[in-house]
Image 1 (spheres, helix red, strand yellow):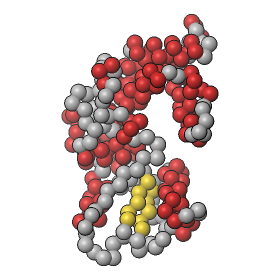
Image 2 (cartoon, helix red, strand yellow):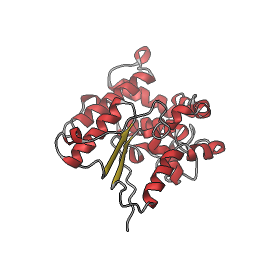
Image 3 (cartoon, one colour):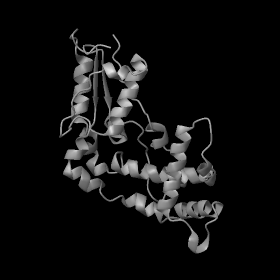
Image 4 (tube, one colour):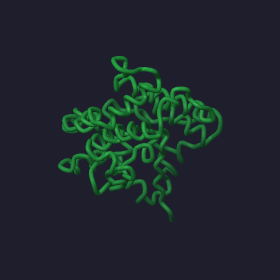
Length: 238
């Protein structure tokens, strides 16, 4: 490790710093992060959390209309009924949507922590149930950080303006004193907004509350494009 060769920058969140330390360990060995100089995070982080400083973005994405409507639709309601029934909750005891989402989240995290075992709660969900929950999550991302609002496409594409400029300056530079690698740890919000800037994973037909069955082979599938621990590498070849 050398400060001349590597640049490390994260956000103010504990989880992003922990992720970046783990990445440094992967590069430099056990506790390798202790040698690393992590850049200071400014109070207004336009580089890695630009959405925090954009009132228009908050106004557009504040109410998840399509996602909320999907919860009231037949596919989601049937999923709730099936999961509740499998766990022994029926009739007036049927679980609420937020409770099923919580159980699914616990299932997901337990499966990650014990990748060679099985989370007991995961048995409550069939493959079809998981597909409904995934679509519910995809609707959130599609409208909050994806292609859901064509009228505001330019805003979403340019949200990462500072980060894209940093990347392009670095890739185009021929200064021998530059870092060999610039490494950032940020959030799924920023990662997916970058994909919009690149024009990646854009479906011809928008995701809506009505077309779950028609979107089984959609491109915008968050479990594939932005799972936990996603890395995006941009490399310049000589």
